[in-house]
Amino acid sequence: MGKYQEGVQTTFVVLATVITLYFQFTADRSIQSVAFFGILITLVIFYFGYSYVRDKFSRIEINAVKIKNIEERINKRKGQLDPQIIIIIFILIVLLLYLRSIGFLKF
Image (cartoon, rainbow, N blue to C red; front, side, top):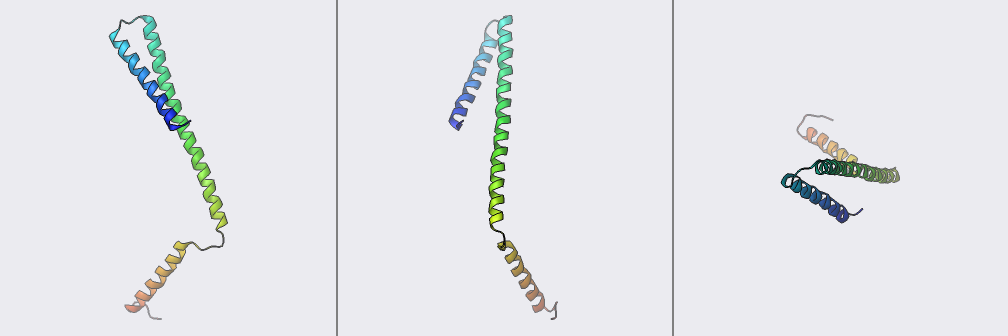
């Protein structure tokens, strides 16, 4: 479902809730109107709860696919040195040269 469609649905649900709330507090309250009001509020809460859970599960599925793609790329790179390791080696060499130049190391 597209973002536009979800936006239209959410707008409709919020609009229906606002209209119901307005008429519930301005019109006379019969038992039937109170029952429909309770049912509508319950359905709205269920709608937003369901939307929240569905959104979280879709994000989990998207993240699982991303993790799988990253694992495949890492497996393809076997045998290659990570650039961070090379930088750490250079840092270590420069640190040793620095310590030698200040007289801390003698070799």
